[in-house]
Image (cartoon, rainbow, N blue to C red):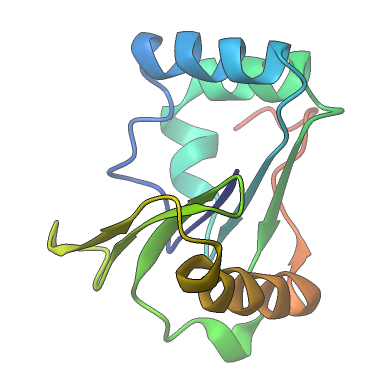
Length: 130
């Protein structure tokens, strides 16, 4: 899964429910990449996600967007290169969902790859949040 959001504040990545879902996904050899403008929200308010990152550091990578991309305000998740859920602006829950369409998901996937190539190291398994 490939995730992009300015700060992941509304994703509830630190909740016990999300922790259980992500642990199940990662235990089945899933891979998770997160790209954010800032990782401060995850560092301060998501201790479960910090533990998940430590436990599955081989399967999770978190990076920060380059300064040139900091004006981007959308948010999206790509799964299996077939499905995408995208919010047009991260502050609003209006958006689109595309299922079982490699063609429609390809544009978002290519955009993510370009953003990832420009990104900087971000959150890692030994971050304490202090």
